[in-house]
Image 1 (cartoon, helix red, strand yellow):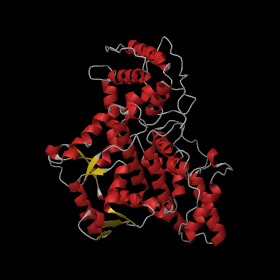
Image 2 (image 1 turned 60 degrees about the horizontal axis):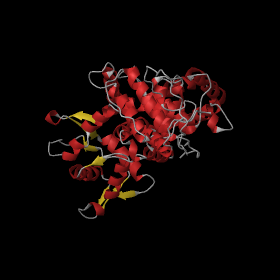
Image 3 (image 1 turned 90 degrees about the vertical axis):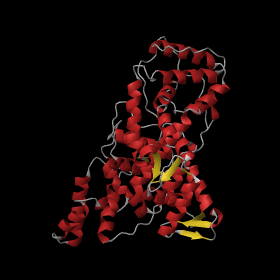
Image 4 (image 1 turned 180 degrees about the vertical axis):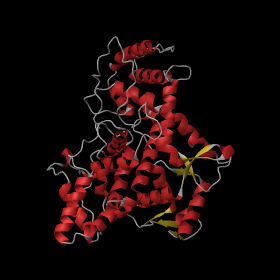
Length: 442
C-alpha cells in the first residue's frame, strides 16, 4: 500500500480546540441511540455495491410509470389497483430484487447518520461492486416492474461515476476482504440476500466495531489481524468457569470502545484532508520510515497538551513512534475521568453499544454482560463461512468464524454441533471435530 508521506501539515501556534471525526467510523459525538435507520442504510449499500442510482423522482413517480405500463399492456383498468395493493402498499416491492432498495436511500445525502453508516460499509467495499447480473426468478408482474425500474435508473458509461468510492484505506483489511467475499456470495443469490440483508449488515457492523476497538490500540504491530473475541450461543449459560468468555468477551470490548473516538480523531488531525486517509497503523509505518518526523510530532504534542490544558508529562524523543504514541496518549487523556470531555466520550460509547452492538450483547445475571449469537445470526454466519463450497469440516468452519472475529470455546463448540444436528445440516463420521461436516442451509 502507499504509505503516508512525512510532509504532514505544518503545526501552528494554535491547535484546533474541537475533536473532529469524519473517517473510518459512522458515529459522531452528538449522536444518540436510535440515530440509524437500517432500511435507508440498505439502500446506500445497494447503491455502492450495484453501482446504480435513481433520478430525482421518487417512489410515487415510479409507481405512476408502472401504472402507465400495465394499463397500456393489459388494457384493463381494473387490474392496476390489484398490482398497486400487492406491491406498493406494503414492502413487497422491495422483495422483487435488491436494487429496488435504492428507493430507501434517496434521503441519505450529505453527512446524515444513515449516509455515514453507509460510508462505513463503502469503506469495507473499497472498489468492489457486482459485475455479473444474477438470475432472478420473477413472475409476470414482478418482471414488468423490474423492467420498468431498469429504465428508471441513472445510466453511466463509467460505473465509478454513479457513487463516490471510499476516500480512506480499509482500517481492517482482513474484515474488508471477508465483507466483499461474503457480499459477493450473497449477491449470486438475490432472494436469499433480500431475506438476510439487514442481518448481514448488522453482523458486519458489529464485527467491524468490535475488531476495530480491540485492534486500534495495537497500532505498533502493523496491519491488524482478527483478535480473539469469545461468544456463547443465546441458549447457553454464562457460568463463571467460562474463562475465555469473560476474559476475551464483552468487558474487554467495552473498555476498548473508549479508544475509538480519541484515537481516530487524533489520527484524522494528523493527515492531509485532500489525500486518502490512512489508518493509524499505516501512519506508524510511514513515520518509522522517516525519522525526521519526530520533531514535528513532538511539537504537535506540546501544542496539543497546552491547548487542552492537560497535566501529563510527555518526554520528547527522537523516535517518531514515541512521538505518535504521545499524541494518542494525550488524545485519550483529554477524555479521562475528571476531565471536562469525559462525558462526551461516555455518550459516544453508549451510542456505539446501542446502535452497533446491541444485537450481540445480553445480560446474564451474576455473570454480567456477555457476547452472544442467536440462531438467526449463527445460520447466516455458517452459510457465509461455507460460501461456495458444499460443506466444511467443523474444525475448518471454526477457523472461518475466527478469521471474521468470532470465537467459541470448547463448550460452545459442542453446543454448536448439537444445534447443527437439530437443524439437520451436519454429517457426523465420528465424535471428533475432524470427522464432522457442516452443510449450508441454502
